[in-house]
Amino acid sequence: SVVGYQMSDDVWSVAFSSDGNRIAIGCAAKIILMERETGNLISTIDIPNAVAVEVLFGPDQTLAFSDFNDSITVWDLTRNKIRYSVNGGVGFEPNHFAISPDGRRLITAAFSEMYIWDYEMGKRIDTRKSPGDGIGSSPAFAFSEDGKYLAAGGCFQFNVEACVRGEVLLWENEVLALDLTSFSTRIRSLAFSTDNRYLAIASAENEDQVELLDLESRS
Image (cartoon, rainbow, N blue to C red; front, side):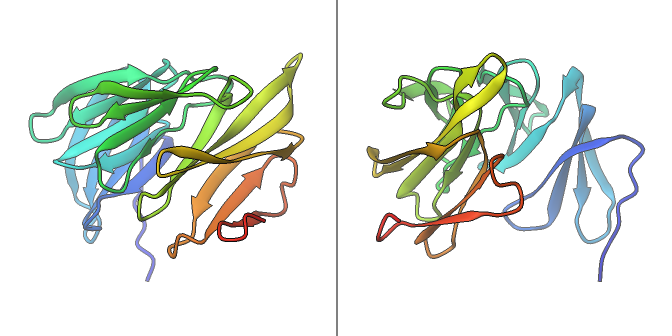
């Protein structure tokens, strides 16, 4: 059956907790936590002058969210306060971010590079760039379930205000293993299959289709 949650605010994002029992609903100026089964309100996180455009549950009773303010914020659900905020350039759309499957790394980006942070402490531990010296605007990120692969995509070359070159970068065990530059516009979304063999790529070039990359044959 389908359970509906009637909201009095515009909803920007939703996320499940790892146990599936809680739902985080990102809105303007607040994030609402609800019980999945009953729809009962657990708590409300007030984020004045912000919009929770993307939310993800993290480890150790935390919740991460992005806004239009060039930052990713990690919220401590136990203490009900901000644990830290880190840089994440927004670009032309709300910034995306990712948390590694083991919960140890947080991925964000600016216009020219990708940042890897220690999730617990909020300290930057690595910076990565594409061979073209940029990650791009509004990047998409995805980890494979085993944590072996990290994919990043976005817009890597602009002409005036239009994206004329999209790119997908694939790191395998921290080493850049693949650089795909065959896209004529930006990458919107990336996802790995549960067996870690395929990477699904959605771009603004082919809005009615998804491309699958076989990670074994790299084609």
